[in-house]
Image 1 (cartoon, rainbow, N blue to C red):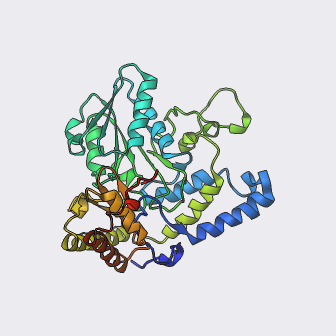
Image 2 (cartoon, one colour):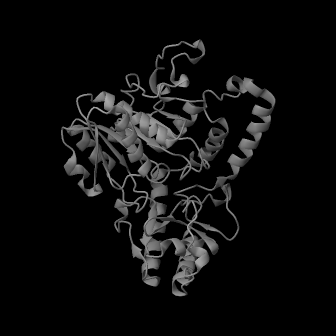
Length: 394
C-alpha cells in the first residue's frame, strides 16, 4: 500500500505513534477550513446554511464515514460527541426491549460508555441494571434477560478486538439489541456493520479518521429500524420540519432523526477534507499494512527491550491497530520517549500504547522508534523527576 505521508502535516523529527488517540493534521483540512471561514462564513454569513450546504453536511459526511464501516448510504449521520451518541443508541435500544432491564457490557469498554449507561439507568430507575463482565465472559453471559449488549470493538488499552459478527449473532439469538462503539475501529480495521446486523454503531472521528480535536461523532442505525427508532434526545434538528417551529416533537424520517444540535460546521469541514484521503483506500490493504508494522514492532521490542511486557493479544487477528506494552514506570518512560520525538501515550495503570497508521507510518519509522525505546530503557532515561509528574492528559 503506498504511503500518503505527504498529505499530512507531520513535524520534522517526530515519529507519530499516537494516531489511535488523535490523528495528525491533514494538509487539505487546514486549507479547506481556512477557505470555509473566509469564503463561506466570511462572505456568505448566515446564507451559508443554504448556499454552502452546511445544513446537509452531517448526512453528507455521515455517508463518507459510513463507507468505511460498511454502512449503506443514508444510515449514518454526524453530530455531537461520542458520549451523546452512546446515550442516544442505548436509550433507543432500551425502548425497543421494554420488558427487559439489563444492559450488558465488559470491563474493557471505554469508561464514557459505562458512565453514560450508569447515568441513563439512574434517570430511568425502575430496576435497570448495568452488568459488566470480563471481555472473555460476554458470550456466556448473554441470556434472555439482556435488553442491550453495548461493547467497544477494540479495547482502548490493549487493542484486544471482539468478533463483531459472532457476538452480534449471539446477542440476537438471546433477543438483545446490539450496540457497537467503533471509536478505535473506524479507519483502522475493516468493519461491516450491515453485514454483522447490529442495530446501532457509534464512534468518534478524531483518531484514525484525522478529523481534529473535538471532531464530531457518528451514529449508525440499521436501515430497517431508521424510521421507527425513538430518539431520547429529541433535538430541534432531529425534527421532521425544524423550521416549522412546531411546539411538539415529530421525528424526521430515517437517520436524520438522530440529529440533535446545530452542526459544528468548522469541525465538519475539517473532517470532510480529511476523509478525502480515504476515497481510494482499500481497508483490507490498510489492515494488512498495519499488521505488518505491528508484527515488526513487537518482534523488535521483545528482542531488544525485555523490561517491557506485551499487553496486547499476540495473535494479530485478535488485535486492532495498536500495540500496548506494560511497564511499571510506563508513564515516565513514555514522557522520555516523547522528549526524544517518539509520540505514543500512556493508559493507567501501566500501559504504554503505540498506534500504527500505515497512511503515514512505515517500517523505517517503526525501527527508529524501537531504537529510541531501547535507549530510554537501557539507559534508564525515564528515571528523571521531570518525566514523573503526571500531566492532565496522559
